[in-house]
Image 1 (cartoon, rainbow, N blue to C red):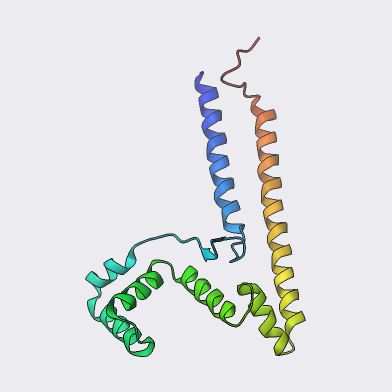
Image 2: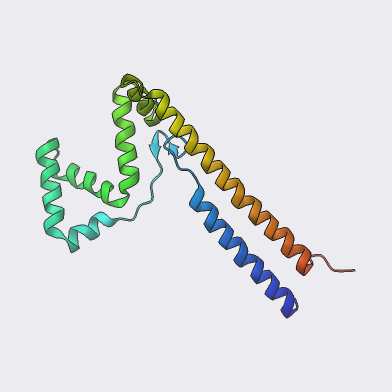
Length: 168
């Protein structure tokens, strides 16, 4: 591989990395599409044990509060608080989904819309959800179109040969 081809390949890889990082920022993560066995997939950061060591007083206060208000054992309270510390967003979504399922809804979104219907705001909530989904799809499509155009431009501009196919 010549120096120029290596440079162009590196440029394309950097461009691809940039595009992928931008695209991931526009991805929509909803409980319905991110569930596995009706539980949100989580990223474990294991912040609970770290919090227990570095901020013992606050950790202890939170655990004691859970034991008192929810009637948990110490082990249950530590597990619950640890789940919250590991990923607060997924914790909230899991709890929300569990709450709405306890009310008889299939999932979190059905529960949100169903409860909004009871307040007479169901159509407004549905419209906001649909608008959000459409806007997210438009953004994702735009990013992919720009990435594809950049790839085609760089392919035409630099006319990079495939490294595994000998040129004639």
